[in-house]
Image 1 (cartoon, rainbow, N blue to C red):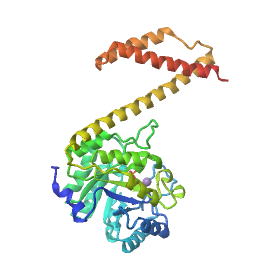
Image 2 (image 1 turned 30 degrees about the vertical axis):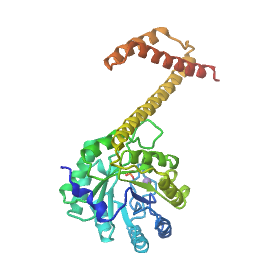
Image 3 (image 1 turned 120 degrees about the vertical axis):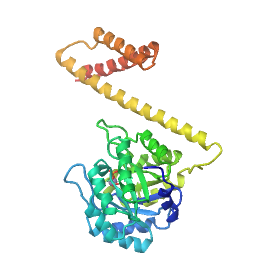
Image 4 (image 1 turned 90 degrees about the horizontal axis):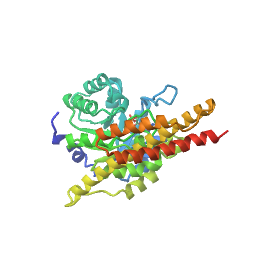
Length: 361
Ligand code: PEP
Ligand code: MN
């Protein structure tokens, strides 16, 4: 897929402002809920209303969406508010129903992008459509799979394309629900600067308090827009309650965001700098995550030693670790002096954690 200017023109065709704002509930729940949220978003900076009708849940038993009836509610909301309507589609049958109900924007969810068969089925069902289609990144950190999804749609004659960065699954818990791995989205943007890139801070953070910060970061990287889950009664939402914000809060977030000028004289430098700083911040958070996890393992070892009445400090083991780390560090260009200092500090903290377990009842 070459980089095609025509892929961004839909932003102009629909007179969509910068940054593009998509908002609405994680899931359509009732007709009233849909209409109430849409009304509150009317006459704001929001251009597109989102609502999940078919919900892909990781485990069975959760709310799996209201299905086709929800499309009727969206039609009503559109007629009343003039907002464009967006839903997630995962199968050809979803596409058919969405088209029949005049939905304007279809997005492909992260659990669907991972599956080339599913994406191809959707692309075939959408053949040459004029609809806007947005592709979320796959749940796993795989840039090629994301690009492949977009290519399948492009080859099916779909030209109004965009991508949504919603973060990536990790096995270990981090401060994010889905780790942003900014570098992957930025690589996508560098390869395809003409495909609009939209941040999904709701699914990245999983927490409403972190939404502003992640959205600002994305704008600093020159993203084209945002998709933010919005609900009149977030705490009682039927899905993703912790990450949804009220329409009022959304408006405040949008108001507080600093929109960067793309072609400012110093814009390039500042953008480069902020991209590099985010990389550093990303690595620092990962370092803390890993060190925190290491300390938990140290505590487990402490518990084990306590049960067997073995001393906390075992010098032989520690000397072996240090020797190995100095060797592995030098392969990564890290000085012996640094490695020794760093691991001494880690070792001390580990012992403190083990001792804590020893002293506890
Ligand atoms: C959603 O947007 O509600 C959703 C299910 O997102 P994702 O595919 O990113 O998990
Ligand atoms: Mn959701």
